[in-house]
Length: 279
Image 1 (cartoon, rainbow, N blue to C red):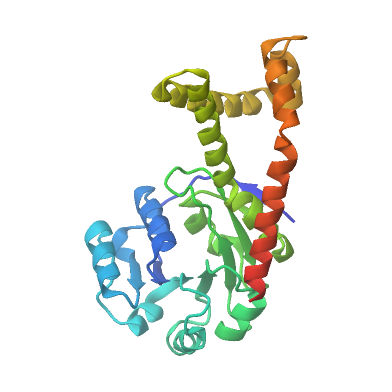
Image 2 (cartoon, one colour):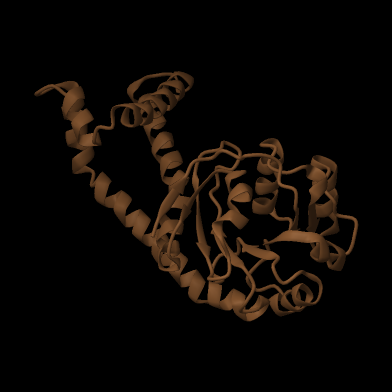
């Protein structure tokens, strides 16, 4: 089961959102949902064991960090779990059970914590959502992978999730694959662009010129695929004449084992995701 939803927030979320943990990924989400006017900053709260971190978040975004965890849990419509897997989850589960409303949704962005594990901590009847966020939150691009338990509904989290990118709902069994392929995906693109720029410099172009050409070609090629609806192979056939410059370049790229190397990279990332989730 897989569905893609385009980004398009309808309006300000009225409920309060509480983040347990204020690390880099939590901050990226907060920055995006405030910038995209998904929710007003004063309806976002954060607790974290690092007081200096809370001060940074408050001064930068104007969010609420000055009250107790218990007070925030009692008011929250969404609770975003953004802690480390080894943190005191059972204590958090007890606090949520004591202070949060039964229908308050838990949104976990913690890698490796399955729905089954989360239900054991926060209660089998509570709405629970697993999210593997994309790392392109500031751009509006990139898909987050999302899994719902039987008590959660898309309508409960759509506006929040669409505030920092796009969404693909899926079966939990696919989430590790999505993480190694989709969420790690920008890494492969960054590395390819870096290597392409270096190739331009090796051939004799100034680095700034090679950089601009590489970025323009990347953006234009993606747009061409979207606009034409053609398969990459069809565009390759259009772009390359027999015995031409492009075909000689592609021949060497094929000899470098480029495609298989990229595929091995994705499989290694998926394997590592599965290993981490098993710990």
